[in-house]
Length: 350
Ligand code: NAD
Ligand code: UFG
Image (cartoon, rainbow, N blue to C red; front, side, top):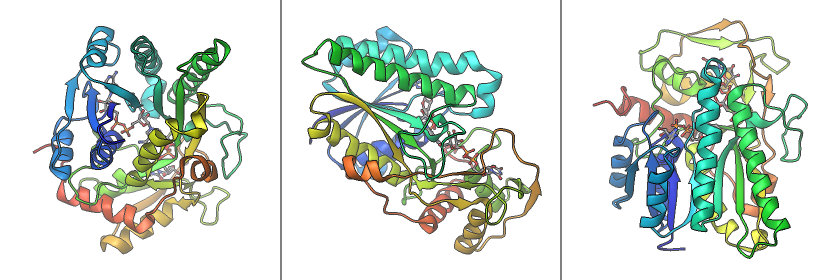
């Protein structure tokens, strides 16, 4: 494993920067490509500070084929972790072409360049959002798919493309077949325990934890709890929150798994990365207050369009085939979110 070079697309972002820390600490060489559309290069400087190791950063858009080809010519890349993409559900409804161009076309360019370079091991950031309304909790990987917004559909389309790519190699009896892990993330939260890297959303956050932590620090006045009339024990929505460091450790396990027995004949397989445990919005508010000693000012507001009552994973397949399971609980997630937010009230801005 040591000295293998991993290309990390979107490595300056929230999850990507945490992945870079784990990769460097595990002994990999890391090349990051990122166009910084939703991140700052400062995150990578902090990754180097945490690890005491350096990485290569190329400021480019993955849709720039020539630039990407040059990266494969310059570095001995053995596998790619593909985080680069746009991820805001609401924005995707307003700008669908931008989302399909970035997430779907971007992945087409990446896989074309990988195929030409004969680098065929890929870990893709998929999402629990690909599951349809007919899936039931806890979600298993074989449940029906049916994303309900352009962001989710862009992830589902990429999953289809990657399955087709792998199937073509099987039909053609390729001697170097594609080996692809589709990692379906549930709700990543938290931050590295150093407090040096974390989630740094632009503008007013859409997601629960960044919103709660900005209320706690006084940047936002009040949290709106979207609905208290769901068929859940306290009436608020339930999600499977997972510590971002546990999540990225699943990617390191996936690199090993792609190189091993499970993928000996090639293939494209989906794995849920969640804890298997659901928490409600009010559970999160209560945990935040307990762990930080701050009061979270909140009000009950109408349901948010498109939200499900409940969504949590069955992560058994990831345990069985990737050898991965979570190590951190809700208090770690909340404490690390708060450590990052209170040390960096303006994110990566000086
Ligand atoms: P992020 O926005 O922090 O990171 C994505 C990174 O990709 C950013 O640094 C951005 O600048 C970069 N990028 C975007 N388009 C690019 C392009 N065309 N070329 C080069 N770089 C580009 O998001 P994140 O939370 O770290 O998410 C990483 C991946 O995980 C995304 O694909 C996202 O859809 C997926 N995901 C995230 C969540 C979540 O809740 N955070 C849940 C499920 C799946
Ligand atoms: N919520 C509030 N108030 C807020 C924000 C959220 O009550 O201000 C509630 C939501 O209604 C939901 C829960 O908190 O019940 C979690 O909401 P998030 O927006 O944090 O997360 P989602 O589950 O809606 O979606 C996230 C990502 C998606 C991804 C999905 C599954 O935003 O991109 O997790 O991985 F697809």
